[in-house]
Image 1: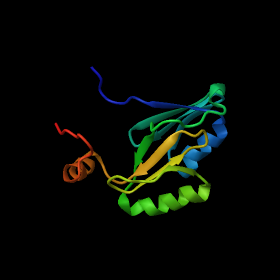
Image 2: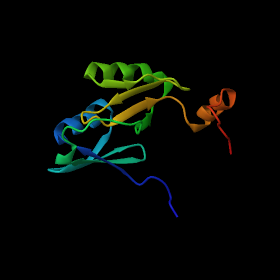
Image 3: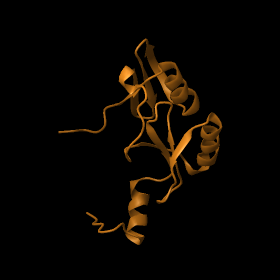
Length: 135
């Protein structure tokens, strides 16, 4: 039986650039770094960056993305920091809670979001998505 998310591995084309982005821009804590990868943590999340030649030239093509929580009082400052870094925004927010959708140096789709599942469900109960059913 599954217990939860163990770790997330992202294939990267430039380890130094990605390491800098996740540590110095997003605030992950580095735990290990080697020629082909790095282990980072953010709260309970264990993130592995894995150098992979197959990642060269890949672009986003779907809605798959990874969202990170941010406190409402820190959202604006982090959004400014990301924009100053030069991130590319890939979607406008149309749902509950403040969100900024952006890509990392390898075009992995990321999001910073204020809110949680409880606040999202409460908003959906007020204005449900088409054919939405609650359990």
